[in-house]
Length: 114
Image (tube, rainbow, N blue to C red; front, side, top):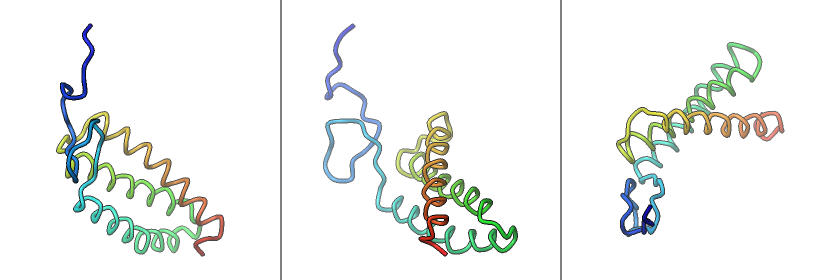
């Protein structure tokens, strides 16, 4: 087995500013804008509708965290890297669903958001 140097490894992701030594996923300005606007709309539109329908906040937390995770996964796999659906898409979706769900749960039930 031969050592692979950083110049020989396949660069899958493009850096916004210059180049990096490592193959790390990046998000473009367009992707960041889509994530910010999408998350903002989910928080302002979807969560209040689900809270009004169910009278408890759990369905709003679950659905909103899945929608925000879908937006993040979509941006990373379709807009930034053009990979499409695959195992990494669903891995990113699952991880961000859990992370965003915990953050929403702590902010809502920690009385940061009424």
